[in-house]
Image (tube, rainbow, N blue to C red; front, side, top):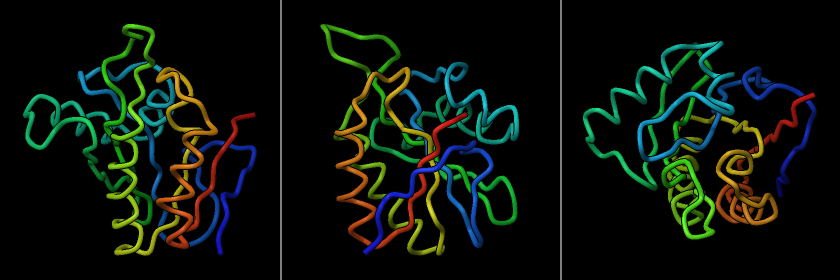
Length: 156
Protein backbone atom coordinates (compact mmCIF):
# COMPACT_ATOMS: atom_id res chain seq x y z
CA UNK A 1 0.00 0.00 0.00
CA UNK A 2 1.27 3.46 -0.94
CA UNK A 3 1.46 6.38 1.46
CA UNK A 4 1.98 10.06 0.81
CA UNK A 5 5.66 10.85 0.27
CA UNK A 6 6.59 14.21 1.85
CA UNK A 7 9.74 15.93 0.62
CA UNK A 8 11.32 19.37 0.70
CA UNK A 9 11.43 20.84 -2.77
CA UNK A 10 9.59 22.54 -5.59
CA UNK A 11 6.41 20.91 -6.86
CA UNK A 12 7.04 22.45 -10.30
CA UNK A 13 10.14 20.23 -10.52
CA UNK A 14 8.57 16.83 -9.81
CA UNK A 15 10.96 14.08 -8.76
CA UNK A 16 11.04 10.51 -10.04
CA UNK A 17 10.66 8.67 -13.31
CA UNK A 18 7.82 8.28 -15.78
CA UNK A 19 4.80 10.47 -16.34
CA UNK A 20 4.04 13.09 -13.70
CA UNK A 21 0.88 15.04 -12.93
CA UNK A 22 1.19 18.26 -10.91
CA UNK A 23 -2.12 19.12 -9.24
CA UNK A 24 -3.16 22.42 -7.73
CA UNK A 25 -6.31 24.27 -6.70
CA UNK A 26 -7.85 27.04 -8.82
CA UNK A 27 -10.77 29.30 -8.00
CA UNK A 28 -14.11 29.49 -9.79
CA UNK A 29 -13.94 33.18 -10.74
CA UNK A 30 -11.15 33.13 -13.31
CA UNK A 31 -8.53 34.76 -11.06
CA UNK A 32 -4.94 33.58 -11.56
CA UNK A 33 -2.17 35.59 -9.97
CA UNK A 34 -1.36 34.60 -6.37
CA UNK A 35 0.01 31.54 -4.65
CA UNK A 36 1.30 28.39 -6.36
CA UNK A 37 -0.02 29.45 -9.78
CA UNK A 38 2.77 32.03 -9.92
CA UNK A 39 5.36 29.25 -9.77
CA UNK A 40 3.52 27.35 -12.51
CA UNK A 41 3.31 30.43 -14.76
CA UNK A 42 7.00 31.21 -14.20
CA UNK A 43 7.89 27.79 -15.62
CA UNK A 44 5.09 27.22 -18.18
CA UNK A 45 2.61 29.73 -19.61
CA UNK A 46 0.18 27.18 -21.08
CA UNK A 47 -1.67 26.20 -17.85
CA UNK A 48 -2.57 29.84 -17.18
CA UNK A 49 -3.58 30.52 -20.79
CA UNK A 50 -5.75 27.42 -20.93
CA UNK A 51 -7.33 28.17 -17.53
CA UNK A 52 -8.22 31.71 -18.64
CA UNK A 53 -9.71 30.43 -21.91
CA UNK A 54 -11.63 27.74 -20.02
CA UNK A 55 -13.08 30.35 -17.65
CA UNK A 56 -13.96 32.67 -20.55
CA UNK A 57 -15.78 29.89 -22.42
CA UNK A 58 -17.53 28.60 -19.25
CA UNK A 59 -17.66 25.22 -21.05
CA UNK A 60 -17.74 22.56 -18.32
CA UNK A 61 -16.16 25.10 -15.94
CA UNK A 62 -17.05 25.14 -12.24
CA UNK A 63 -16.40 23.65 -8.83
CA UNK A 64 -15.31 20.02 -9.03
CA UNK A 65 -14.06 20.27 -12.63
CA UNK A 66 -10.49 19.62 -13.80
CA UNK A 67 -8.51 20.75 -16.82
CA UNK A 68 -5.45 18.70 -17.78
CA UNK A 69 -2.66 20.55 -19.59
CA UNK A 70 0.43 18.84 -20.99
CA UNK A 71 3.50 21.04 -20.42
CA UNK A 72 6.35 18.63 -21.22
CA UNK A 73 6.53 15.23 -22.89
CA UNK A 74 5.95 13.50 -19.54
CA UNK A 75 4.59 16.32 -17.32
CA UNK A 76 0.96 17.40 -17.02
CA UNK A 77 -0.75 20.06 -14.90
CA UNK A 78 -4.21 19.55 -13.40
CA UNK A 79 -6.06 22.86 -12.95
CA UNK A 80 -8.60 21.76 -10.31
CA UNK A 81 -11.54 24.05 -9.51
CA UNK A 82 -11.76 23.49 -5.76
CA UNK A 83 -12.05 27.02 -4.43
CA UNK A 84 -15.13 29.26 -4.34
CA UNK A 85 -14.11 32.85 -5.07
CA UNK A 86 -10.97 34.12 -3.33
CA UNK A 87 -12.03 35.57 0.01
CA UNK A 88 -13.67 34.24 3.14
CA UNK A 89 -17.43 34.66 3.19
CA UNK A 90 -19.51 34.23 6.34
CA UNK A 91 -16.42 32.90 8.12
CA UNK A 92 -16.03 30.12 5.55
CA UNK A 93 -12.70 29.66 3.80
CA UNK A 94 -12.79 29.60 -0.02
CA UNK A 95 -11.78 25.90 -0.17
CA UNK A 96 -14.62 23.51 -1.00
CA UNK A 97 -13.78 19.99 0.18
CA UNK A 98 -16.54 18.35 -1.85
CA UNK A 99 -15.18 20.01 -5.01
CA UNK A 100 -11.63 18.92 -4.13
CA UNK A 101 -12.93 15.34 -3.75
CA UNK A 102 -14.64 15.50 -7.15
CA UNK A 103 -11.48 16.90 -8.71
CA UNK A 104 -9.26 14.25 -7.15
CA UNK A 105 -11.55 11.48 -8.45
CA UNK A 106 -10.95 12.81 -11.98
CA UNK A 107 -7.23 13.08 -11.20
CA UNK A 108 -7.20 9.45 -10.01
CA UNK A 109 -8.78 8.30 -13.29
CA UNK A 110 -6.26 10.35 -15.28
CA UNK A 111 -3.33 8.98 -13.24
CA UNK A 112 -4.43 5.39 -13.69
CA UNK A 113 -5.20 5.77 -17.41
CA UNK A 114 -1.94 7.62 -18.13
CA UNK A 115 0.30 5.84 -15.61
CA UNK A 116 1.29 9.05 -13.86
CA UNK A 117 2.53 9.75 -10.38
CA UNK A 118 0.96 12.77 -8.66
CA UNK A 119 2.88 15.77 -7.33
CA UNK A 120 1.56 18.77 -5.41
CA UNK A 121 2.19 21.42 -2.81
CA UNK A 122 -0.11 21.22 0.24
CA UNK A 123 -3.12 21.95 -1.94
CA UNK A 124 -5.92 24.08 -0.59
CA UNK A 125 -3.99 25.18 2.50
CA UNK A 126 -2.57 28.50 1.41
CA UNK A 127 -4.83 31.19 -0.01
CA UNK A 128 -7.80 28.78 -0.10
CA UNK A 129 -7.69 28.57 3.71
CA UNK A 130 -7.98 24.81 4.08
CA UNK A 131 -6.69 22.53 6.81
CA UNK A 132 -4.05 20.03 5.68
CA UNK A 133 -5.32 17.27 7.99
CA UNK A 134 -8.69 17.36 6.19
CA UNK A 135 -7.12 17.54 2.72
CA UNK A 136 -4.73 14.70 3.58
CA UNK A 137 -7.68 12.46 4.51
CA UNK A 138 -9.26 13.14 1.11
CA UNK A 139 -5.98 12.38 -0.69
CA UNK A 140 -5.58 9.13 1.25
CA UNK A 141 -9.14 8.02 0.50
CA UNK A 142 -9.20 8.93 -3.18
CA UNK A 143 -5.60 8.51 -4.37
CA UNK A 144 -3.57 6.44 -1.90
CA UNK A 145 -6.32 3.83 -1.49
CA UNK A 146 -6.09 3.30 -5.29
CA UNK A 147 -2.33 2.73 -4.89
CA UNK A 148 -1.45 5.93 -6.77
CA UNK A 149 1.98 7.36 -5.93
CA UNK A 150 1.62 10.85 -4.40
CA UNK A 151 4.43 13.24 -3.49
CA UNK A 152 3.76 16.41 -1.49
CA UNK A 153 6.38 19.15 -1.68
CA UNK A 154 7.16 21.55 1.14
CA UNK A 155 9.06 24.46 -0.36
CA UNK A 156 12.40 25.28 1.20
